[in-house]
Length: 236
Image 1 (cartoon, rainbow, N blue to C red):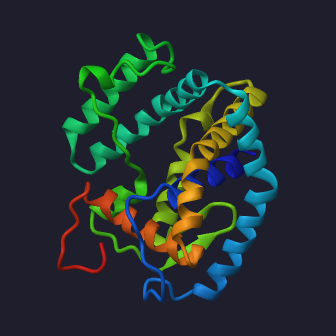
Image 2 (tube, rainbow, N blue to C red):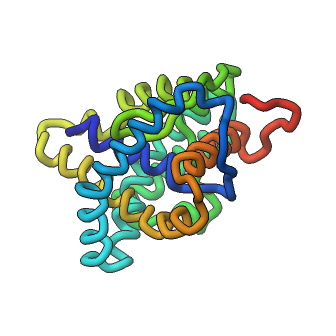
């Protein structure tokens, strides 16, 4: 249960949250396209018949303030490893900000349910171990679509494994049922957040697979370079 929940949530988040338009067509970064398309079709089926209906019900039933509190709670937990990755990447000021967010939101924000840190100037960052590997110069490798987990490249797949192993929820003591409930809630909440993006994708994409692939690769490159990727290179 642990791995499935985290895999689905992260895969969907990486694949569907887009930062600008992407083009369709062949991509030299995708030498395994035929296999990737088959896995993509499988993932689409799992989402259509299992995850999406639950997320739609969750989104319909819960009021917006409750969903915001749930999102804040899980974002607060994530700030721990975001801070660690910023430290690994040689960004101590950002790491200090992340850990400051964790401290303030965990106390004043009541276990992170309320985001008190952002209004006082502690910016929310988005970092993971795949970005840390990229920051240290490791090449991306080919694009790959993993079962359930969704879009990755070879570098991010390795980083993703580390992210799974260092997920703070994996070390929730004693109460396995509570821990699994937290994983499940995080998964459904993440999927519910992506519902509006689906409409944009369906309207804009002639080929959904290519659209999501190109959007993923562009977004990950931007994240590695904090929004300022070097122009001369085709790869990061």
